[in-house]
Image (spheres, rainbow, N blue to C red):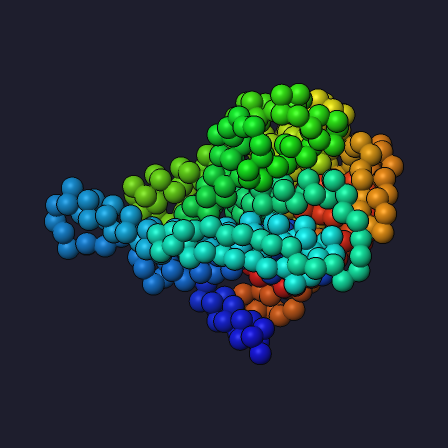
Length: 417
């Protein structure tokens, strides 16, 4: 009954949406992964956003004759709306992704059930935090150190996935809704600043510190004074996150286009080479072996785009690297069927995989191949699609996926705006 009510509510919201040329999906998979939740939460956020925009205008005080007075009134109005409505909505979206689909996802794929999650009332109405506590193992198993490491990185990993999912929505449309921009900046702050302002310490007291402690301990450096992977390194390498242009454009849209001018949409700007548009990006990720840096290149021509990336792992302990490609609107068969692809190939150290006993994976080459599909259900002006992801990966680490090899299967529905 709850599912029926939620689905009906979502369809009612969808009916009142205005078109912006973007595609949104609601996904589900057996373990409620951070990848599926990022798609679903960003879509739900978008439905709320455009509904909010239709109910609460960006500008008021049209009868105020003074231009300065009108500006002051509107700045105050938008700030009040930000604190009373937009900050708490974004806070709830963010903390659910961070706690339930970050830590919780890593618990679920390790076999834990009856996990407990607490989401505090969002700022400014509460503390705005949250916590996760693992449940029980119905089938006895041994958890490996690498699985423990991915848990401590799970919250940060999940918010990065949400951040990337939001920003990819803008690639084909070149437009940025101010509410998506706000959430993009908020997710960036959540995964970036814990690294940028990481303090030196003598004992781990929160997740990033536990992550660093466990990676060093796995490679034989349990004492803080002997650590090879240090907080200082994380403070330095986190500066590379500022080279992510999507976050910069999101901040510009939030503060300038909407905050100062009251506009609903900002713009995504590209470097142009004839008919080809190009946008480079850099970001930092966390793996079971240490940090890694993504060097991304986005290419766009008309209504099709590609993402090429190379990821280089921290070689303090062992070398790891990988590269991949992801398509956007690669194949569109008269709007009835849409197909996109992602391929990732990597070279990684040996992984310790949990189970009845700890089993090592084969080090060296691994890969992921994934197809994203959408099949149109109705020939209406507002298309609705059956959507999903189907693929396979070998043993190895890639953001948002299980460490063990297996089939990738996610399903749901999608719609165009």
